[in-house]
Image (cartoon, rainbow, N blue to C red):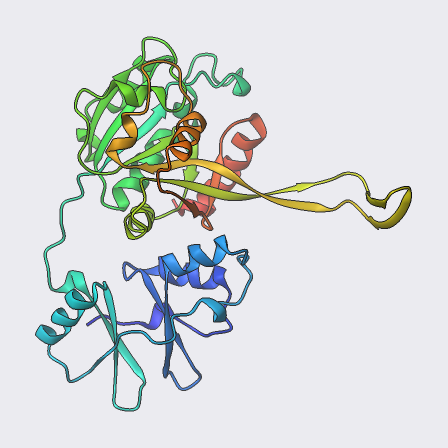
Length: 349
């Protein structure tokens, strides 16, 4: 049984606070309690993502998305009985309560079974020229630019390794020798790295058609210029729980108009809204794909947007996964400067 002090929240806590609690430990859950520490309900990462997709914000209360009738066990129950319940109910965590309903701990399935080796491959798209970052990329490929005194690619590798994933394939083209000389086979970084060498640029998806042997497990695909604190296991869990063929990470992006917005009814002005801000959802450049998706990719320049539109037309099950954690795309000089300023605070080096 594990302690729950770090993952306790109230029903008035915000989604941002809940996400922080879930990320505190490897328990992958938050427990919602009242003032007397009695269990009100539980909140998983999946509950939060679904709430965000329904329009809740990071500052919304968790009250509307709490699972208020979770499966629980009593403190006196044996571990054997707990394991039977977990397997029968297909749940990973079970809160433990005493006779008065106060939560005293939590059991997780990994306490009873040996965790499986994570065989999923991580495909990093690292072949772009990074022309918008010139002159920084004149002699260095964009994924090798240093943020926080280490290449962007190394931070990506380290974050996946923290989540338990160690099998990488880097798709390279522009100044690929710099990348390959630095990482080699990955052994010195405690991972395994292979390479897909693009003879010509193949876009954000085309290189996936060059697999020598199609993987059996779902694969991660990530652009080589992204930094995020996301626990990637949460993403794969979400993908599997929804029986998805493909999952795209999305990010909220705000666009502020520099002008007053005028609404008309014919020639009559009915309202004026000064410099409104519009919220849109954008592709975050991080995906999980089932192996069958790879069959749709031609051996030519092909972007991920085309692949997803193709899958939509073929009625594949596609889900979106909103990222509430830190995320940034190093696309322009200002992004590069901002990421360097934030790196030490965000990644706690």
